Length: 513
Image (cartoon, rainbow, N blue to C red; front, side, top):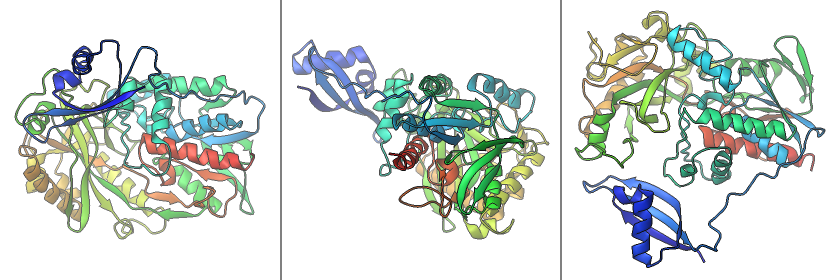
């Protein structure tokens, strides 16, 4: 029978497989154990850093906890369900439909992951942004080339563990099942995405690229089909909208078709970057992390001017990347490779944007999009009308003064000195400045002229919510349209989007059970 142990160990034991097994053999007096890690997290609150570890021990003839495989069916000739988008919500919705005996047909505006790599590289090297294939659009969605973090605060809406299991079944490192902050890495996630696509097509589903939805037909509140690329007509009874939070054209299409949309509060700000060694020494009490400890991260939150300000998408050992989806805009984001071995650490530092803020740029449910687009255009102009990002030393940003020079940074297209405090919205700047002061008190050494801030971090979440029925999860007053994932306004990040996609697909399948 499996025995479960809760342990507190030094890093050189907890992160070394041979050392851990030796420790457990000595502790239990047994040498035939199979060790399965259930959970692992670093506790760096005190100078003597420890690792909290939960393990399951089984003997040679006992089951060690196998993953539950997919219940695949041949759906080649089954009822078809359209899915708009091949991000986590779309891909995991497709897997759930296959398990329910329905045929997913994914319409993806971008390109498959292998070809998408070339388009992403061109943003940095040639400053060319293709509107349908970039860091946000294409196979796998925004997460494919922007980190692959799997941490989520959402625990109530679905089976987070099942999402992680399915990723492992498709090639992700099994460590994501037990790490406190699981992470696949931008270098490994494309292979996982390709494997998921092969599972879908192998069961009879379809994944079609270069298929951008340009119109939607809804008659008397009932979905009838879509127009693709301006001239192709696709007829169907149901569609799962898994288009992601940056597919702004979809919101306009839905609005024109009479689908109810609502403004949703979101967050915007800047991305701050430090040398990773500096963050390591802050978090690990003045020491370098050494051989066993992971690249140090942080999670910061405060109140400033009556609004929340917090770190977002913190990328230890990572890079800043350009996430614009069209020419004439600059958007910064972050990513980390699987080993998190870059010289830099970066994070979004963002503050809440409410409807009264966005209404300065337009009214109605799409005012948040106008707010985002206005600041992204300003960043493009400040950066030199290329994909170079406007940036400032952190200390200068806080003090409201221009930076004559910038520290070295990781942002591939390059940085241009800019007085961010002078052109970003005054209330946003004031809250960010107050928050950075507070973060500097919480993390001694965080505020330094070695750090830079770049603008604009604008794509944290959807500024629009597609209102849906709380029970059936289809769009309110629109039969056959099922919004899912980040673009619907009901999820944020890979795991919660995948969970939402599976949940929506399950509700849809109940119609045909």
